[in-house]
Length: 120
Image (tube, rainbow, N blue to C red; front, side):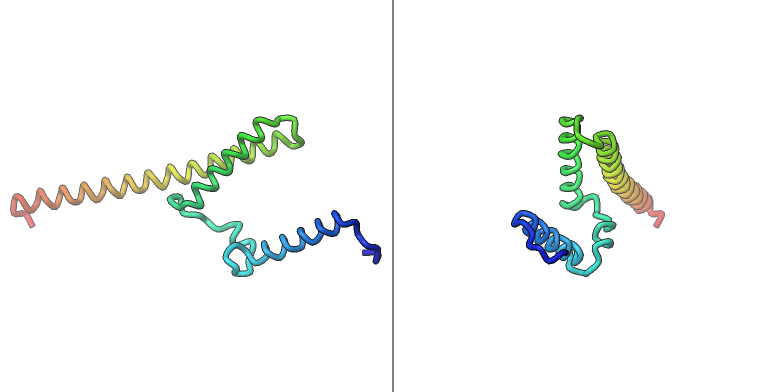
């Protein structure tokens, strides 16, 4: 900034932050849109979704073990909200699969009943 050399640790930190910003600006898929990656919806049956839930669980555990940290209440609340949202998405996904399986089985039973009695 002022043309003065930065201490080594500050220079390294600034370089790290610069690299971090440039890699995150490309996004995970390299499509150049960081916001799209952040808002991307993961399928509930994907490995990434499971990893996110697992990571949230770890974050909740860490925050609960360290209630003396600054903004403890806010982090605890937000992590719990995100975790519950993820579990709700997973529950809805499972219920949808069960509903489709029941509908399919019901349609199959109805079709078999009709063919047995020559109603087709």
